[in-house]
Length: 470
Image (cartoon, rainbow, N blue to C red; front, top):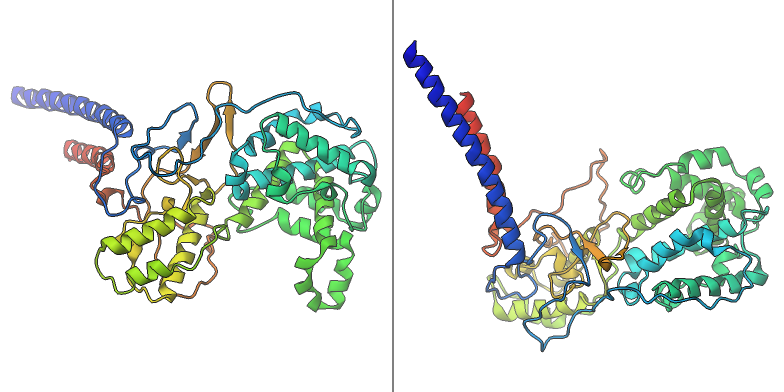
């Protein structure tokens, strides 16, 4: 009996010591992770673009202009430098737009930050243009809120548009936003849509169905199993006068995408929604719609990769000349803009299909350590910044100024296509579960050791507790 008690005390003491050791090891992991973030490991590699990131192995990176980067190679062109704080001043407005802009101040601040100078051109596809487009639709409804109209009158549309751009510029936005995003004053007027007033709209459209479908928009489901967008399209078709024509002639469907009245009427539907639903909710919904659209295509422009094909056509093993040519080409396209993680998958597949069509059958992405983030613009000398695929905004506060959040948590290998033909790619699984990104290569990269320690602690803890229990 005494022996049993002694053994129990020893086992309890051992358990206590092991638990303390696990807690210490977990703390040590955090310290090593922080040290790894602050002290990047230098890795010799043939691929300059596929070098390990110096930060962001665990959490999204907040790119803040308050951090001054160090560029080890000053000969190379520097990445764009973002302003610490936007240049704010009193706007010079026409005074001929009968709207109290102060009532939309918070939304204008968001729009100005998302189109901050000089970020607007770099973020045009993912953040800036979707937000400015959404704001104009919301303004269209806000302007007509005290009348029975759903559009801005032609006589004042140009004044209102000019004032909007002036106010946004005074809050730090790029003054060239109209050119960057191809927006103009006619976007506020409803154009050639035959229905522009509330009474006719509510007589034509099943508004109860429309409002119910769009009162809450799920950012994860709307792109794959849309609820609000079909309701908007149904209302658009009805007020555009095309519904009856479509019923009579099914061949008209192919012409709808080129119809200005259809696009104008969709803006009228958005205007009606902004009158009936909270502005922030409608803004989020419109941003989700844009996200669904932009994440289906690669926004980058690819020139014919003749030099890459010439250098890599017969390569079967890592080749300095092949990787150098590939890295040079990718370094050129990544300067175009910042893209999302899903866009990067599509861009890598598109470019890979071009290379396969040129006769390159070997996965040179793998040979040259090309990652998804290499297809997006570099920020402050870091590896490419991949934006999140869900609607996002540029960050701004009085302490850190303007910044970005990059979805850059790992080195994810760029996918090599299985054929030279580029088929449409869908991120929607039949059971509504989003597909996983390509397998991470972090643990295979000798320059990124923190991932190994991250896996060590839970595995070791499981082993210890299993030993104690059994």
